Image 1 (cartoon, rainbow, N blue to C red):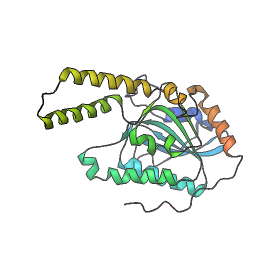
Image 2 (cartoon, helix red, strand yellow):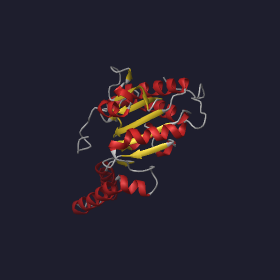
Image 3 (spheres, rainbow, N blue to C red):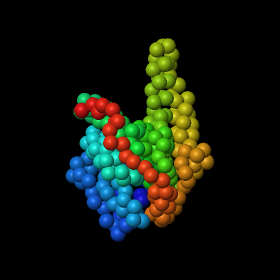
Image 4 (spheres, helix red, strand yellow):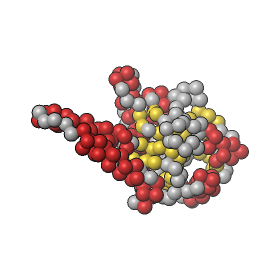
Length: 246
């Protein structure tokens, strides 16, 4: 794992160290390459894996995830989400290309899926991407964080920037001069607060996850979780996903 969360890494390196025999049958490896999906076994239990590879989720990744989640439900296979995302891509070009409806397809699939979900926050987990990757709000059976992970509704710089824009527009509407020094102080305060409140120890202390784990223990922890999950019957949803906008 790179020390800087902005630096992407290949999640296959993590998957190879977690699954049985490093054997990972990848699903659509050349399509939507910012999201790695595939099938494996973990301590003998079959599992489907979705792992962020480049941080941002685009339309192709969203559609790929939606199909993969539906397949897992057809086969009654639990899903493991490995988080390292800053969210869904934004911008005029991507919104005209359908990122909103495609992202909604992924979130629809996650929220209506009935197979057990496991989530591990490896790196960043921000915004709607946190929800799409089955964050706490979507009730995974277990959710763990690595010590270097960070999670928030928005990144510190992004939230500070939004507050600055709102304050500037408010001052302009009133015909008042804008205080740049106060703006800089506000941005610094917000960034510091969000930075500290996105750390795993802060979030775990408020029960936003089920614990901060040593990355080296990930395979063992997930194996224990799967063992607990299989003590009771479960069945994936065969329909009931609602209407997917195409």
